[in-house]
Length: 449
Image (cartoon, rainbow, N blue to C red; front, side, top):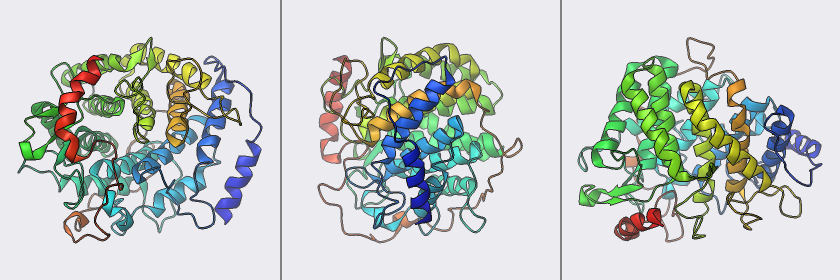
């Protein structure tokens, strides 16, 4: 109840809204004011701090992974703005969902728990460690240890029996999508390893990160011209690919490569990879405005996909910090996208509702957590050049780690803890296994269109 009262009081202070958003990127107050209003609206969708609500869950129609990503956006919000209004609710949410092994595997999510889902919660925890977000109480799991626990759990699942390696999409064998090896799961693992390597200085994380990158490239999910495709069927030994491209896959690998570039103190190999991945993101921009090209024009983006641009903006901003020479390419795109996003955030009865498609005039009548998060991350990311860079254990970091976290057993190999998945349980960040082959054929068509 104390958390509820604090958040309610914070929201009441934010209630006065403006009638139109004309973002002035040369005015820090303009960025802060619009970010504050967009964040406020995003949290109106959150029932977790209300009576009967579950901390950390936004609830239907939002899957568990997007909740973790949304709290990552609020960690970024605190980092960029200094506004502590959401610190308590974010901490409560992040700790409530850690699960019995403290590695973001809560049993009540078993029927839809993927490696990518777990990975997004871990990346949010990693952001908290790197940005010196207020630490949890000493008797609670700590941000760095949580990130290490997820990494260790996933490293144990690296599967060489099919496709020569890689992580599967789903963790549990009884879930639809277990046979699918997708780029987002491996991208989360790659980026997490790279960030842990930089934070801790432990080369083992870097070795795993490079292994994940090399596997993705070898299997063809990362092409020679640095395009990133959705995934492949392990039952076909990953000989056929789903060629659909999503913004967040590009962002995951771009930032991961930038962290490796930073960790290796500017190694030419990683500079080349960052440059290639950066240039390949051009497909996701129309006149420098970000677009989810695989589904926006056809109006087919599902609830998950309507949040993807948030992570792309988040990761492009991190890339600027880790590889400052990328700013000349990235910042104009973040700036143009932010102005377009802001103009698409003054709809609805409250004049504070964001749409999804920023490349068209007027509101597309899309709204929700994903739309607000996309706008929030893109707008606030324009402050990336004026905030302190992510810390490390030897340079300002205060989060306590545990290199052995997550190594005491993997619940992925235990018996199901919930009823088997139903048809409506999960579409998630990729596609149902039954449609994989069809989508492999259609993927190229979408990108050509």
